[in-house]
Length: 296
Image (cartoon, rainbow, N blue to C red; front, side, top):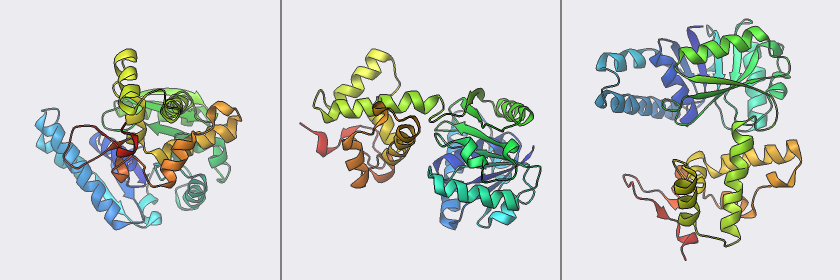
């Protein structure tokens, strides 16, 4: 599987394209918006420059990586010769089902269809195709070029051969694959999202402030960043979407999103992507500044 298509040129999509291209794969990066594709190539180039400056790759490696990526706005053209297709679109179940219906029609009958979903049922996604045995979850972590884990999720009908192929492919990318079963949130987000939600509830109930909550978790639990900063980094809208999947799928009140999170998403305070969440994000600034909404 050296011919790979990646659907979606956002944060996850460009990172996935980056790691495949850097390991010698021919990548078709597909997005409906040409500006998104241009931004993705710029981001990949900038990230490669950072690796060159650190001495982890050479200029020749950078050039080879970029030459391995071609961009498409037309899905049919982009997936025509792909042996593996990785969908990395927005975490929206209706959108993903629509994409997989199209992929099933447009892609080679032998192509494996993978999704980077962080919470949506692989079995449900596979059900809209005629190749449920070839549909699998391939959940990369953000930032993709840096983070080692790939959470591989077998749907109810995913074949053993496909699971093994994706496991081996992940290792080929220099990642550490972990195979899990298809239940809401899988492992990563079933554990992570309730923690983030509880941190938001702790803030909502006035137990402590933003910096205090994050400091406790960083210094007391050895987390590289606090849960509120991490929520901003993931995107508060994404956190809310995953919590809703957990709540609807598992039915336990502990997964119910905090009202503060719901209000922030409704108000457009989505974290890094919108410039404000629990913290303010200013271009070029490395200092964390708590949002005025949460200052005492």
